Amino acid sequence: LTTPSAAILDQVDEKDLIAALSHDFRQHLRLVTSYLSLAQRQGAAALDPKILKHLETAQDHAVRIQSLIADLVHWLRLRSEPMSRESCSISEIWDEAQQQEGTLIVSLHAHITQDENLPAVTGDKKMLAEAFSHLLRNSLHYHGPGVPRIHLGVQRESMLWLFSIHDDGQGMTLPECN
Image (cartoon, rainbow, N blue to C red):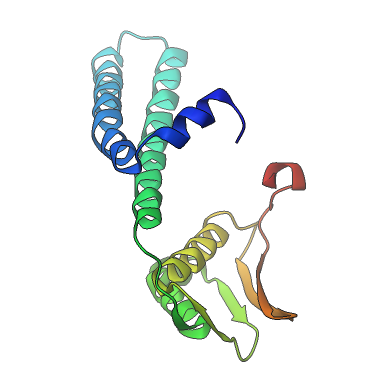
Protein backbone atom coordinates (compact mmCIF):
# COMPACT_ATOMS: atom_id res chain seq x y z
CA LEU A 1 0.00 0.00 0.00
CA THR A 2 1.31 3.42 -0.88
CA THR A 3 -1.47 5.78 0.20
CA PRO A 4 -1.04 8.24 3.09
CA SER A 5 -3.51 6.21 5.15
CA ALA A 6 -1.38 3.10 4.58
CA ALA A 7 1.60 4.89 6.15
CA ILE A 8 -0.55 5.67 9.18
CA LEU A 9 -1.72 2.06 9.39
CA ASP A 10 1.90 0.87 9.33
CA GLN A 11 2.49 2.87 12.52
CA VAL A 12 -0.60 1.58 14.35
CA ASP A 13 -0.02 -1.12 16.94
CA GLU A 14 -2.00 -4.21 15.96
CA LYS A 15 -3.24 -4.70 19.53
CA ASP A 16 -4.61 -1.14 19.56
CA LEU A 17 -6.29 -1.76 16.20
CA ILE A 18 -7.84 -5.00 17.45
CA ALA A 19 -9.13 -3.20 20.55
CA ALA A 20 -10.59 -0.36 18.49
CA LEU A 21 -12.23 -2.72 16.03
CA SER A 22 -13.58 -5.12 18.60
CA HIS A 23 -14.94 -2.48 20.94
CA ASP A 24 -15.26 1.02 19.51
CA PHE A 25 -16.38 0.21 15.96
CA ARG A 26 -18.72 -2.54 17.13
CA GLN A 27 -20.26 -0.21 19.72
CA HIS A 28 -21.10 2.37 17.03
CA LEU A 29 -22.45 -0.29 14.71
CA ARG A 30 -24.65 -1.71 17.47
CA LEU A 31 -26.07 1.77 17.94
CA VAL A 32 -26.72 2.15 14.20
CA THR A 33 -28.38 -1.26 13.92
CA SER A 34 -30.49 -0.56 17.02
CA TYR A 35 -31.77 2.71 15.58
CA LEU A 36 -32.42 1.12 12.21
CA SER A 37 -34.41 -1.68 13.85
CA LEU A 38 -36.32 0.84 15.94
CA ALA A 39 -37.14 2.91 12.85
CA GLN A 40 -38.32 -0.21 11.03
CA ARG A 41 -40.56 -1.34 13.90
CA GLN A 42 -42.02 2.01 14.86
CA GLY A 43 -42.29 3.43 11.37
CA ALA A 44 -43.63 0.35 9.62
CA ALA A 45 -47.19 1.68 9.40
CA ALA A 46 -46.35 5.31 8.74
CA LEU A 47 -43.42 5.08 6.33
CA ASP A 48 -43.51 4.66 2.58
CA PRO A 49 -42.70 1.05 1.55
CA LYS A 50 -39.67 2.32 -0.40
CA ILE A 51 -38.28 3.97 2.72
CA LEU A 52 -38.84 0.75 4.69
CA LYS A 53 -36.97 -1.15 1.99
CA HIS A 54 -34.06 1.34 2.28
CA LEU A 55 -34.02 0.84 6.05
CA GLU A 56 -33.96 -2.93 5.55
CA THR A 57 -31.06 -2.60 3.09
CA ALA A 58 -29.17 -0.35 5.52
CA GLN A 59 -29.77 -2.89 8.29
CA ASP A 60 -28.44 -5.71 6.08
CA HIS A 61 -25.32 -3.69 5.28
CA ALA A 62 -24.74 -2.86 8.94
CA VAL A 63 -24.93 -6.56 9.81
CA ARG A 64 -22.48 -7.30 6.99
CA ILE A 65 -20.08 -4.65 8.31
CA GLN A 66 -20.29 -6.25 11.77
CA SER A 67 -19.33 -9.57 10.20
CA LEU A 68 -16.44 -7.98 8.30
CA ILE A 69 -15.14 -6.36 11.49
CA ALA A 70 -15.33 -9.70 13.32
CA ASP A 71 -13.43 -11.37 10.46
CA LEU A 72 -10.81 -8.61 10.46
CA VAL A 73 -10.33 -8.87 14.23
CA HIS A 74 -9.98 -12.64 13.86
CA TRP A 75 -7.43 -12.23 11.05
CA LEU A 76 -5.42 -9.67 13.01
CA ARG A 77 -5.34 -11.96 16.05
CA LEU A 78 -4.18 -14.86 13.88
CA ARG A 79 -1.51 -12.65 12.37
CA SER A 80 -0.23 -11.57 15.76
CA GLU A 81 0.18 -15.17 16.97
CA PRO A 82 3.46 -16.92 16.17
CA MET A 83 3.07 -19.34 13.27
CA SER A 84 3.95 -22.95 13.89
CA ARG A 85 5.71 -25.10 11.33
CA GLU A 86 4.59 -28.68 11.42
CA SER A 87 3.72 -31.46 9.00
CA CYS A 88 0.05 -31.08 8.05
CA SER A 89 -1.98 -33.67 6.19
CA ILE A 90 -4.06 -31.76 3.64
CA SER A 91 -6.33 -34.80 3.36
CA GLU A 92 -7.13 -34.58 7.09
CA ILE A 93 -7.57 -30.81 6.92
CA TRP A 94 -9.93 -31.14 3.92
CA ASP A 95 -11.91 -33.86 5.74
CA GLU A 96 -12.22 -31.61 8.82
CA ALA A 97 -13.43 -28.72 6.65
CA GLN A 98 -16.12 -31.00 5.19
CA GLN A 99 -17.15 -32.13 8.67
CA GLN A 100 -17.49 -28.50 9.80
CA GLU A 101 -19.73 -27.74 6.83
CA GLY A 102 -21.51 -31.11 7.00
CA THR A 103 -25.01 -29.73 7.58
CA LEU A 104 -24.73 -27.34 4.64
CA ILE A 105 -23.19 -30.03 2.41
CA VAL A 106 -26.06 -32.41 3.16
CA SER A 107 -28.78 -29.78 2.75
CA LEU A 108 -27.39 -28.70 -0.63
CA HIS A 109 -26.66 -32.29 -1.73
CA ALA A 110 -23.19 -30.99 -2.61
CA HIS A 111 -20.88 -33.23 -4.61
CA ILE A 112 -17.34 -32.83 -3.25
CA THR A 113 -14.31 -34.58 -4.71
CA GLN A 114 -10.56 -34.35 -4.36
CA ASP A 115 -7.44 -35.53 -6.12
CA GLU A 116 -6.08 -38.80 -4.82
CA ASN A 117 -3.12 -38.76 -2.47
CA LEU A 118 -3.28 -35.19 -1.20
CA PRO A 119 0.15 -34.40 0.24
CA ALA A 120 1.30 -33.43 3.69
CA VAL A 121 2.85 -29.96 3.76
CA THR A 122 4.84 -28.02 6.32
CA GLY A 123 2.91 -25.09 7.72
CA ASP A 124 0.69 -23.74 10.44
CA LYS A 125 -2.12 -26.29 10.78
CA LYS A 126 -4.58 -23.81 12.28
CA MET A 127 -4.12 -21.33 9.43
CA LEU A 128 -4.24 -24.02 6.74
CA ALA A 129 -7.42 -25.46 8.27
CA GLU A 130 -9.01 -22.05 8.31
CA ALA A 131 -8.02 -21.32 4.71
CA PHE A 132 -9.42 -24.61 3.37
CA SER A 133 -12.56 -24.24 5.48
CA HIS A 134 -13.19 -20.73 4.10
CA LEU A 135 -12.59 -21.89 0.53
CA LEU A 136 -15.07 -24.75 0.96
CA ARG A 137 -17.64 -22.51 2.67
CA ASN A 138 -17.38 -19.92 -0.13
CA SER A 139 -17.83 -22.61 -2.76
CA LEU A 140 -20.93 -23.86 -0.96
CA HIS A 141 -22.44 -20.40 -0.43
CA TYR A 142 -21.75 -19.02 -3.90
CA HIS A 143 -22.40 -22.07 -6.04
CA GLY A 144 -24.05 -21.90 -9.43
CA PRO A 145 -27.54 -23.18 -10.21
CA GLY A 146 -28.25 -26.74 -9.18
CA VAL A 147 -26.19 -29.02 -6.96
CA PRO A 148 -22.81 -27.56 -5.93
CA ARG A 149 -19.85 -29.42 -7.43
CA ILE A 150 -16.55 -28.75 -5.68
CA HIS A 151 -13.15 -30.31 -6.36
CA LEU A 152 -9.87 -29.89 -4.49
CA GLY A 153 -6.96 -30.34 -6.86
CA VAL A 154 -3.21 -30.37 -6.32
CA GLN A 155 -0.18 -30.14 -8.61
CA ARG A 156 3.52 -30.35 -7.89
CA GLU A 157 5.36 -27.22 -9.07
CA SER A 158 9.10 -27.69 -8.59
CA MET A 159 9.52 -27.75 -4.79
CA LEU A 160 6.00 -26.46 -4.05
CA TRP A 161 2.47 -27.81 -4.04
CA LEU A 162 -0.17 -25.79 -5.90
CA PHE A 163 -3.70 -26.34 -4.57
CA SER A 164 -6.85 -25.32 -6.40
CA ILE A 165 -10.54 -25.36 -5.63
CA HIS A 166 -12.75 -25.80 -8.68
CA ASP A 167 -16.46 -25.15 -8.30
CA ASP A 168 -19.46 -24.13 -10.36
CA GLY A 169 -19.76 -20.64 -8.85
CA GLN A 170 -19.54 -17.41 -10.81
CA GLY A 171 -15.91 -16.86 -9.79
CA MET A 172 -13.97 -13.66 -9.97
CA THR A 173 -12.40 -11.88 -12.90
CA LEU A 174 -8.69 -11.12 -12.85
CA PRO A 175 -9.24 -7.40 -12.11
CA GLU A 176 -11.40 -8.36 -9.10
CA CYS A 177 -8.58 -10.55 -7.78
CA ASN A 178 -6.09 -7.68 -7.99
